[in-house]
Image: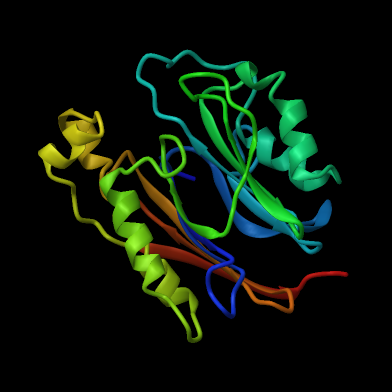
Length: 257
């Protein structure tokens, strides 16, 4: 994923509301989200090049999502794929805290990443790209934004998304409303980007929430909500290089006890 906006224990009906965009090269082979035949409790998309996933959830409530950390000074290929970070948690039974503390010892084997992990007990965040080494962080109730910098770095598209997500208060929420949270193609102004250390034409192109470009752009928008009883609803929309929708996957299930 390259943009994740989520509300955690803020809405009276939904402990979790999430909207996310996966930005990637269009040439990279991908399988749309589905329950994996060899892992029938796992709902996730699949990266057919490296074998992992960018975001997924299981029928017993394990959740994982990863974004790349953008650092032009660190472009060398890493020995391990970031998609393995999410898959390793989703396949196992460790708590998020235990998994992340164990991961921190080998985090340097991956290119820069931000990792969100959750289960019924809580939601956790960890990055291997903080200026100084940091410990995994258990998230408190709140509205959060994550892109290709550290959690809640105030990039314009993150700030815009958090504001939109906060507006979904009180009543029922549907997937179309959540998708609008990450649907803007508006580019940030250069002075806005400069305030957060971003410069140049590439940074401006990537400043949109929804990126349309013939080589690299938004490949999928995933929305997720979960209510107090554990009813979980997932929708993934897939797009081509022109920003046209080419696939839609919807799944709804009650978390297993």
